[in-house]
Image (cartoon, rainbow, N blue to C red):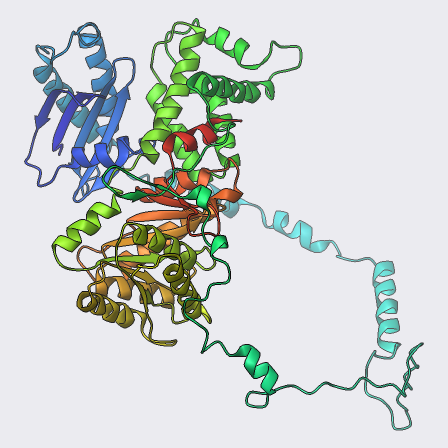
Length: 616
């Protein structure tokens, strides 16, 4: 049974709706936020709670038809209902919708017409189910094959068995070969009584008088006093830093606003990345032109111009006309390091939004396709939640508790390094930071954080940054809990929790991570990932989120709240990992790491990423 049906514009204006039963939640609002805005409309059906939602677009009128029905029923006629209702509505009220000057047009008689249409579709579906009776065995192909085999003559089955497999000559030759093999001595076989082992031939240039003497190994407790002194760092001065100038890049320092808040610098776009709208349009034309040059013979007119001239006579864009452009666009996005599945979903979603739109000139085709892709990328990359960590920290201060951030990720992506960069940013805003060394697995992890704390104290004379450590082999969840409790007593404003790197398929370590999050319930869970990865980014984020959900044991489990992309200075314009990670989680990218100094933490601008993705 249908629960809800609505007709609305893409701008959100509801033209007509009908509820057949009360809904406990708002599946349509969830559809808008989680599917349509996120450019996931290429999916066929959307499930939320106990409901399933299907929809279809009428792009020439900028309308969307949405049907909501129980997930358990799985109604098969919903697709037919959406198609027929959208066609008939466009025929009856297309002129009214096109020429409306705002407001909701008067749709006379549509309610009665839809009820009759729904009843007709339901009746046809019930009749088709009744006509689908199971076939008798006599009507199947298996029965006919069995009958034919049973009626076959016995002589036909024996024709192949009477013929010899080998003739006499071949059999004789095979026997002779077998005897020769058995007569030959076995290699490495058992020696006879009088057999002597062969004498090894001397190696040319070998000198028996000069044998290599094994050097003695220095075991623990038996090293010399000189070696012991060179390895002793226990009495080193805490303020001693190798070279403070190498820890901070003054040219990369952020700026203080009028309110005194220190903001990290924006990621500077190179001249190649700072494209204008016209240049982006030209680049998109080049991409589309290359897609068609590969498919056309050399004698044909070049690329996109010929293609668009052929399209100008059409009344509306069709999937067939968009397929060559979107196919090349998918390849272009994959070359930019976007995950292949995400590139396909994005192109399908843009195509679905363009099909049916009326185009009248060469310029309109080019503009519509380019603008749709550009807007889709901006919608995905624009944060949907607040990225103002300082405001959230201020709220935690008002509640007289420390603000907790947990850094998670796979091995070797730079979690500890970017944690220290985040600590430097917080120290510039006069916040007291406590770093919890919860990586009790990797050798040197605690010492690495100890060096970072020493450097940060040396850079800022009045900085309050401390390290909470309990050594190795301990429970990381317990250490984090003790660190948070200690921060409440000592008055630290922020607790930064460093965790061990783990692969997404390591089940024991993922359970330990879920335990740490469940026990401590941090304010932010930040995933640190490399900008170099492509398809692997999707797998990492999906499995990390799944582990936090499956192993938490909570009714409302936590998930990743934001991301930091590291090694962003090594990828040139291949920024597809940013799109893949944002599309997979729906969460924003808080910062990007661009180097090894404490100031190499930047804000990422959406416009720069879009320009890099669309440029050649």
